[in-house]
Length: 239
Image (cartoon, rainbow, N blue to C red; front, top):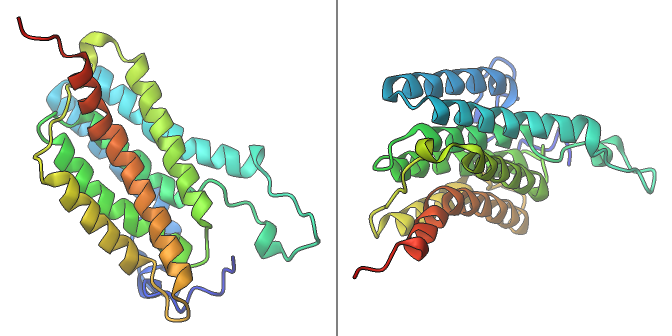
């Protein structure tokens, strides 16, 4: 963990750390603008589709994911200093707020998307998610546990939102094409490896990519695979 150790990361040029350079959303100062624009898009989709309850639940998931990371990292989960370590090692970083932005927005978008489009919306979002999750690790801003914590928090918020939704407003089950899960996971793994790469290490970036890939798996299972399997188990037998 070192705010000055990010230059060997391949994604450094898009991190916004260099003077007068643009940052890839949601890195650096783009986190809050990305969050606001993403929520506006979710609200617009909910209004167009007239899925009011799902829209409210989606905004709740986004705010719960991002707000939860901010509360936990700033007030609830301080990192203890057991050995008089440098400040960079005890700075609070769990869960990752920057990773929480794409995680919350992808989960929120999945709630307001139609069942037919939901797998594709989630697939596109996962590529953004894995790049972000791997990048914040490769830049030495977060540990692997930080991005995994954000993913678990987001999935928990999504599950809670589904449980609280009235049965009449529950989103329909998404059935993805048979090849889509494999394509999504392969592309997510490739994106995680690319975004997590560094010039000065090989083992570290592999850990970063693995953590980012696990985030993608958690979100995909929560949104697409889990509900589809539950629907197949509860489907009444014919005859």
